[in-house]
Length: 253
Image 1 (tube, rainbow, N blue to C red):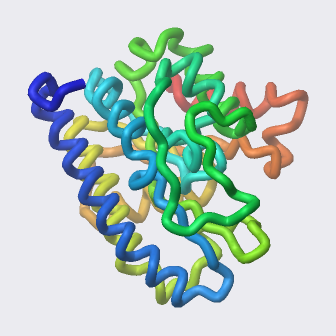
Image 2 (image 1 turned 30 degrees about the horizontal axis):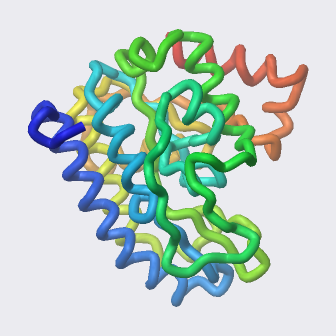
């Protein structure tokens, strides 16, 4: 989508996201230096910018008043640049294909990036986008109601390739980047005139509440749905039906 064809709100969203991308490129070096458990930090907003930009341009301003917010990228967004970006769902549901994904500056041999054609599924993303499709149908209808993003843009792991989530970072090393992430969230919420932010999991819910509090916003309701990760026992009960029903109730009410 050419920039001249973007509406003003979408242009601002893209601009704000580019600013977040550049700030995270600076902060990721500090995170690696100051956290002994982090040896690698990928920024998908950088090397997977093309599909992420397309996602923002296509779906970022269709009228959504609810933000569904994840914690940080996993395997899905790490390869596709799309929040909760199970590659299959990105291709077949969101219809994002044939866009170049580059490589991080420093890659772990167990965490190679293969882009939108990645064959490995992401269960959390498959569940989230599957639920959204079940509730709303087409992506165009879905994004009239919801918009999906992550709070923290970096995908991190240790020397052995084990995933390191933001809650495992030293608090003294995250104050500045979390402030930036909180401001980005509230900026996007303001642009979209959001009424609700739904945190996916307890950590995302906590960070959404902090962002709203830190930026003194009183017009947004913060809710929570359980995390769909297979690591969460609740998400696996009754073949995922309990997670789906609980999440659907929160999203629809």
